[in-house]
Image (cartoon, rainbow, N blue to C red; front, side, top):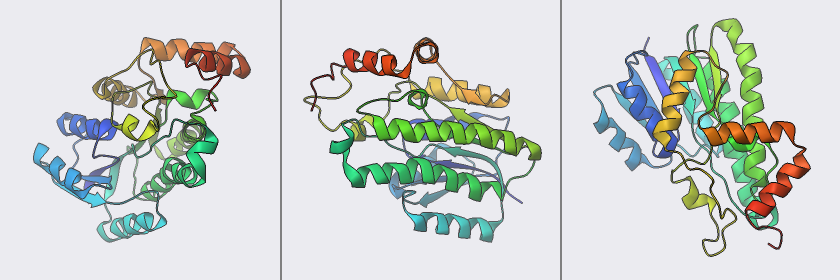
Length: 262
């Protein structure tokens, strides 16, 4: 039985950095990587980075048929999933009304439904010692006007992951959420609708994916339930813990000069 690592959103950003870091990490001993994203070309390029077999699986995880395909592969191959890393997801920075129905539903499908589906299907092929890492966000800890749907989906991911962690430990399976602060990836290429008048005008800190992944893998090995990186992350979480949500939102609106935005 092959011991595999499955990474979604592996073609760029945090997902790609997880792949590169896990290839170098000798603590896991994977027999094969299954990398999932929409771009087959980008996934194929990952195979050139390591000597371990890499299976490129081109899927759009916002579509139901993607999970039928994934389940069929698991049923056919019957691998042992040593680690699942869920990095697929996206956000839109704009008023909820302007983001619109279609994009909002697509975000929910990918960020929420996608996380639950991949976790549930993968758990069926995990044994004691296996694990799951789900990418949430610091946005999960507070309501965020103009990043509303994205933030709400990440709140779901964080709480779902925490509860799943408690359940899965009965089988000796670790489950951890990663909650990055602003991170320098292609995420912003899709998130920012209006470059001339962006929602986020001030990024108080911007971290590198390598920093997020290094901390995440270290925290996973320590058995932590949530991985956080950066001084600004800790300060923000302290603020949202002690201040009412209404005040937190007002600070955000003032910081980003959003009061007169339509």
